[in-house]
Every structure is written in C-alpha cells, then in structure tokens.
Image (tube, rainbow, N blue to C red; front, top):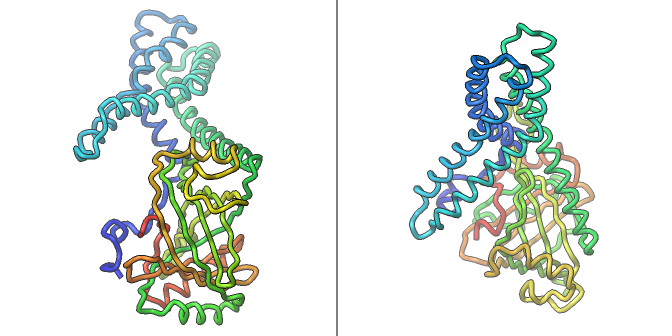
Length: 373
C-alpha cells in the first residue's frame, strides 16, 4: 500500500494531537520555569537588601515578567529560518505570534500564579519566619502550573460548548460519533469487502450515494487539538433523493485501549459534525448561501476563498449500532477509503477495527478525504 499513497501520508498515516492538558502544562511550565529562575534570583538578591515580608512578596512577581517571552521568540526565529523562502512570511508575522504566545502565559501568570505567590510568600514568612523565601517561591510555581493547565483546558472546553451553542441558534444541527479510517487497495473490490463485513456484523440497508464536497481553508479555532474543516456538501442517492448542507466538522484522533497488550493498535477519531440544511438551489460558493446569518458567519471563518473539490461515491451498510462505508474517490488514486462509525459503542468499534486489520491489507489513517486526494 505504501506505493499507492502520497509520501506525506505514507510517512505519517496516524496523526494524534497532543493531550490539551499536557500541551498547556509544557508551554506554561517552560515559561514559568524561566520566569522562576529570574524570580528566585531576584528574590534572593532582595533578601540581601531587606527582610520586609511585603517587599519580598512583590519583588519576585515584578522582575520575573521578562521571562515569558524569550522561548517564544526563539521558536519564532527557528520557524522563520527553516521555512522555505517561497513560503516564508514577513518576520513581523512570526514575531507577532511569539508575543501572542508569551502574552498568554503572562496573563495566566498574573491571574493565577501571582496571587498564589504573594499569598504563599506573605503568610508563609509570617507564620513560619524561618522558611527560606526561595523554597516558598518554588512551591508557588509548581502549584500555578498545575492550576493553569486544568483551568485553561476547562476554559477551552467551555468556549467550544458556547461556539456550538451559537451555531445552533443560527439553525445548525449537530451529530457526534466515533469513526475509524482505513485505506485499502482497489484490487480488493469494495462491494465484495462490504458484503463480507455486512454478513459478519449483521448489517443491512446497503445503498450507494454520490457526494460532491467543496472544502475551504478556514481560520476556525481548534479547541484543544480538534481539527476544524469547513465544507459545502451535496449528496444524492441512486433513488434521486438529495441532501445539501453547509458543514463544520471537528475531529480529534486518539489511541483506544492504550496500555493494553494487543497485536494491533487502534486510532479512532472523535468527530462532531455541525451542519446547516440548505433549503435552496445548491450554492456554488459560501457567498451564494441565502441565509444571511449563516453566510456572514461562514465568510468570516474563511482563510482562503479558493475551494478544493472532492467528489466520491459511497457504498454503505449499517444497523442501529454500526455503519461501514467504502468511498471510491473520483481521482486517479488506486485505493478507496473505508470508514467504520459508531455513536457510542467504542468496544464494538475496536472489535470491527481488529477484524478489518486482521482480514484485509489496509493502512490505518487518521486523515480525511480532503487530505488524501
């Protein structure tokens, strides 16, 4: 299969976002560590000048603030230098991003760490006068990093909830499910593979659908590692029925049954689909959507108005718990995409994934059709 797919996809078929808690912990922890070095040094110097608890409490938080930017500036410079000239943006673009990252850590430090630091230092020195000031300073940093990690992840999840609520008020509907994706060589006839799987897992309702998707590059927030995609979708069946929607999808891959001994590893995707039913002639672009609220929102979400079209035919079989589809992408790619979907039963999803990987020559991927055409 490796010679059938692109180099990028062959080298990284599985792409899993970092744990949002761990990502914040590392970023804020790194920035706080550098600030802590400056803080402790400044506090130690201040003890040579004064023993006043209040003065010692506020000295560190003031001098440490310069420590939140050096790591971000270095990262920006590294990205700037390693980006090919034809794709490199102005240096200001990278510096702006660096200061945005440093400012985020700075604000979190002011709101979370500084109160921890001042209270712990002041009352610690008042109650336990013999406690070294540097020890209380170090303790406040550890507590702040843990607190910020939890609070930022919680805040991001709240923002995602409110984002979906705003879309629902505009008329969007939602659907959540888990899915697994595999590439399988077109030498294996899709219909035959699906019939065998339908027999093993007692699936019915087999049908074939045709899809015309139009994807747009977007600037939607990723909300804790969820990958957003924006598309217009036109779907028809061989019975001449059709459905047309504007969709925003969020996907986040993860490892299922991590830590257990298995012959195979399982990387399903948690997917949330937010869709708006288009009760009009199928628009050729976002601009042609008649509903003003939806049109304005989607236009603001665009990063590039140049569309990418993906056409494919899908044969699907399902029951109330499981859906299996095989997608033949209308292109010159000598493979098709198999997707397994469940709403809640991830144990069933794992069972079907294990069967597919054991019985068929497949490549497990976390990329979508937009990424492989």
